[in-house]
Length: 167
Image (cartoon, rainbow, N blue to C red; front, side):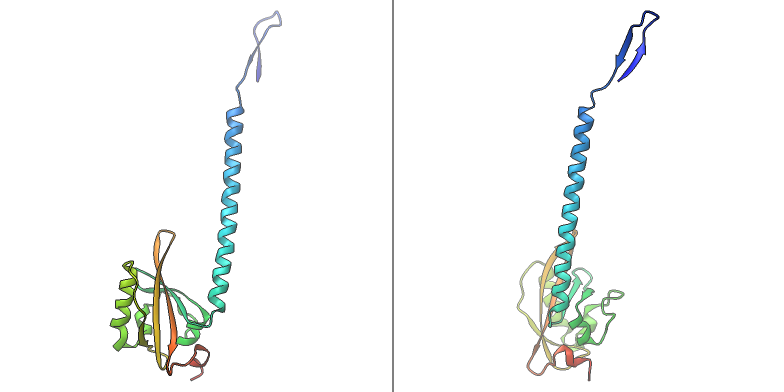
């Protein structure tokens, strides 16, 4: 409130504003900020679990941009299998990991899954690893973008990723 003198007789005028609405807005803002911080913490914890799961799994797993079919992320097993520690760097095209004769089958699988349908795994040979590999994919969305989770499992005479880099 502000007191203003109204004359020489000592009368004053009090001018003020009800701040309850502003206080309620500030409390809502504070509650929203706290909710955002809780959501951010949950997101970081989920990301930590995801990263741990990817890093500890022994099967090669790659994350592809569904539209461009470029590698966004690769777990250590995929990096060992291909002999490339810089696998996701620069968004390398996934097709370059597949032997040329099997690229059409791999592309068809990825296109089917990216189209929102399920597809049976296909057997492929890799460009940089011996043996046959079962290629399986699933689509997921994150931050309004579509991605493909790609898993490679050894078949028959395929060598595990730990041995692939030693040849």
